[in-house]
Amino acid sequence: MIPSNKTCLYHPDQPGVAFCKRCNGYICKKCIIIINGNRKCKKCYEDLIVSKRVNNLFTDKINKYQKRYKISIAVNVILFLIIAFQYFNNSKYNILNTTQTHDERKSNSSSRQTNMISSNRFSIDNIIKLSSGFYPVYEIVKEEDLSNISSNIKQARIIVPLGLKKSDLEDNFKHAIYKLYNKYHADGISIYAYKKGDNINDFWTVGKAEFTPEGNWDKIRPNVNLSEYEVRFWINDGYFNPESVIQIGSVVTLYKSIGSSVPISNSAESWEEWDTLVKVPNNTKAKIIDIYRTGMPVIGDFIRYKISVKYNNKSYNGWVHSTDIKENQ
Image (cartoon, rainbow, N blue to C red; front, side, top):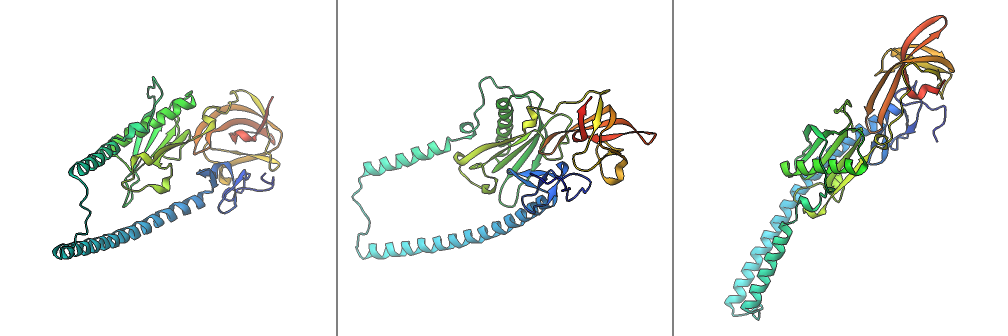
């Protein structure tokens, strides 16, 4: 439960509706970023991204040197075995097991070949299973290369229509993964989904899906057996239950749960202190004259209302959050 007197770390005029799991700072609805189920503020998210990139670079270098070291040891061991074999063979010491018959050797060789063929037959089709009669309705609007020095990683941003069932939405995610894998054979794939009109250059609004080893982004590396890959989904429930919209022309009551006044800004997309036209007392009546609705990163639908209000014998037309409307009249 967030105390009523807490405000956002980055927007002091906005109520703190959650707290960052990393720095414990209170943040408003606009600042929430959810990563693997944990809330983060914008600064902590940026710190984590930078830290992860540095760690990946450092780990890749260590792995490179370890690989060279192991190869060197293996070469030395092989040379030692070759010299030992020649020595004992020349000394007429038979250290090899020669009891295996020609038929047994042929049988074992055939068995190894069969296992190899079986492994190679495992493909993306063994993982991506689509519902019977599925037809894709998404549109890929952007493809991105997120590769690092060791791994081939791809991301696509897609637009999906409203009204899909959860199973249909997941099938569209899987189809997009299937399409990208067959195109790039990537070590990891991420799909971000949006509704039409959302800002596709921001975080996902409808949901996301990842195709990674064991369903874990941190385990992406080259040459992982495809049988270890999983598809995981993160879907915004707001897509299936969108917030209802108050009709234009409705008379409403303005009320801010934290504080005694409601700020009215001159912009639908910005509500900083310098955007404020006026602050009116709680329980002031207003009339809805326009609606701004968009998809917000991770949290989904975001609604602002343009209202007409009179205060101190002056008329104002400006924007308020949907959460600043207490009730319909």
